[in-house]
Image: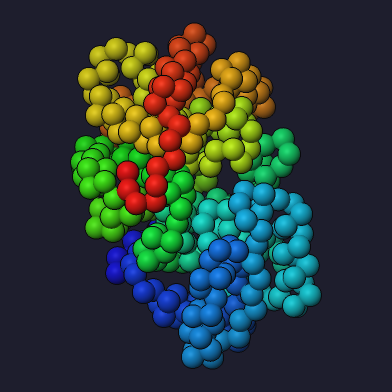
Length: 376
Ligand code: GLY
């Protein structure tokens, strides 16, 4: 079991990474309450796999549990589902002595955290993260929220959990696409951390088994260590935390251009990272040699993405909309080389277009096969 701490003074908390974590999870939740109950919000799939055994653990610990589950997918991150959860909590007379536990991936933790932040002006909460994307990114750092019809995560709050538990035993239950989406955020961390993590990603891909638990658990630990350190330095994304948006300017526009739900967020991050690497090279050709290995990894992942129609015009329109909304120039996180990210708004439109072109060309020529569950 590895424990990595997010340091935020009195709101510091552990991220526990391991297998067979049920009892640890139960004890962590029990520690948060003196006489309260635990309200568990499950992802639908996780509910079927997990609720019986988790209930048995809480039973043993003498903790009262009330549970519910969510509709599948990104559509759960809505005002409608949040309202349903408020109803459920209020009907069950939730109080600030209680504790709310999210069991699922990024959608479940984003939504649960938001509901926990807003009910009774804030009830403590924790996460049992069950997807690769949740473990390496979404569950950590207290960004919570729901989507609005005008865009993703437009309504939300920073509300740090009291703990995050990442049980690696869940990963073999994920579909190929969920794993690929998780690899999108994981490879983002490889770009931010540099050569050591790129080496582990290469070994992971070479093993031809995307569920390879040895390399996966190293990748999760490396990503969590990096994210915990960044959040500890800049909780509210005033400076340093912005680097975690590597690849995301393109990725968010892609999600919009392709149509929400057609590609998973992490899948668009793979394409966004490729476009960001191309843009880094276009801005300074001396970077080409620094980013060869990184682009090779991304091309390998792009080759596994499901094929979707992307119109370049719609992509650029979505980027322009983003610019209009923030009232600023578009901001990009780019790479001088792996491990050396930088932030810039000083990017000519023609180079943005050119990098989008290059990414779309690779996607249309190499993307398009959803491989079987067995490997890369
Ligand atoms: N997912 C990026 C962040 O938490 O800042």
